[in-house]
Each structure stands twice: as C-alpha cells, then as structure tokens.
Image 1 (cartoon, helix red, strand yellow):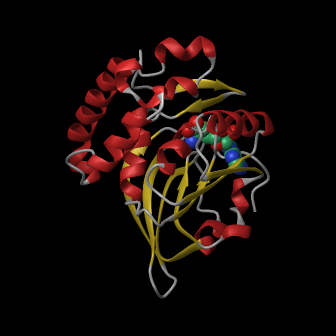
Image 2 (cartoon, rainbow, N blue to C red):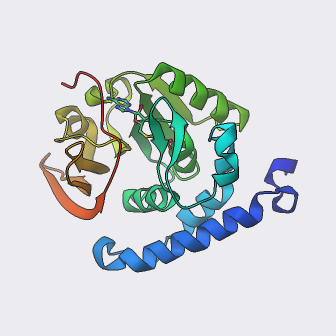
Length: 230
Ligand code: SAH
C-alpha cells in the first residue's frame, strides 16, 4: 500500500468523510424521486477513495469536499459530489463494463467510474481541460481512463458499443449517436433540457430490440453541451 492510499496519512480524510455524510443525507432526501434509499456501498467506497482535492484548481482546494459544484476554469464546473454519486449509482456499473463519458472536465467523475468499471473513454471539447484531466489521472496512477478531445455530440465511435454512457453536460435533446453507441441492454444517465430552462436527469435503457426507454429522475442544473452538434 502506498502512502497516498493510507487514510491516516491523508490530511483530507476527515473532510472526505464529512462529505460522504452529506451525500448520504441527499440520498435520503431524494429517495422518493430516485428510488434509491441509500448510496450503494460500492459507490460510497469509490467516492471515499478518490482525492477530489487533486482535481480542482489550487485556489478551490480548501472547498474541494464541500457538497456543491466548483469552478474548474474555462467557465466549467465539477459537478456537486451528490450528483456524481447519484449518477454513478444510477449507472449500475459492473466490473467488466466499458463506459463512455461525455464531458471529462477535470476528470473527477471519470476517476470515480474507473474504480467500478473496466474501461472508461471520456470526451472533452476544451483541449486545456482534457490535458489537465489526463495529467491528473496519470499522476494518480489511474490507467483505465482514456481522455479524448472532441465534440461529445458524436460520442466516440472508435470504441463503441458501450455498456454504459454518462453525460455530464446537458443536451437539449438526446444526440442520436449516444443511443447508437449504447450496447443492447445498456444503460445511460444524462441530463436533458434547455440551457436556461428545466433540465431533468434521465436514465435511458436500450432494450435488446434496440428501442430506448427513458425515465425522468430528478430536476438538475448542468452546464450546457457546447459545440456544433450533429
Ligand atoms: N465530469 C466532469 C464535469 C465537467 S462539467 C468532472 O468530473 O469534472 C461538463 C464538461 O463538459 C465541461 O468540461 C465541458 O467543457 C464539457 N463539454 C461541454 N460540451 C461538450 C461537448 N460537446 N463535447 C464534450 N465535452 C463537452
């Protein structure tokens, strides 16, 4: 076990524990909407293991474990910890899953996914953020995430199909490529809705016959998906 893995040597351990308690509270509060009465143990363990402070800009570090979104530069934000945990839980990840993430940002969500699935491909439209996320993930020794620069509206066809897809920026309507690149039986978690209008977190499931069934989970507020679209 390396020093960074030893909780007692981690000066952020108590803040991370306090954050988990707040996330637990949010799960309880939203159970009526999400159908999840508690944060799954596997998700809890993943969040407990990822050093969120390493993903935020230096001046944001003191606030890294507050249960709110934080600026990461380029007008973008890292999602609120509860939302990261909720979306991860809704994906129902299996150890063998291949996952596509749209919107790498600082790479924090990808690092959480990386502990619960086999392989993550993550697309980011801002090259500087993609480079930063790549560097942070490498520094932490996370080897099963590949960050790609591109417009996530098109998904990432090279590695399709995916067992799971997660979008961390809101599309006005579902980009067709995402449903195409989801494997039959696969599951997608995505915020859908207008930039300044109502957005809903959705769970979408692709049936064996290729049809996609969607379920509205919770009202949310995400940064919009930018770029040219389809
Ligand atoms: N998962 C991220 C959250 C980042 S916020 C994290 O853990 O930090 C959403 C991200 O989506 C931003 O970094 C933004 O630049 C990116 N984004 C917006 N439009 C995009 C697009 N069309 N393709 C890929 N990424 C996009």
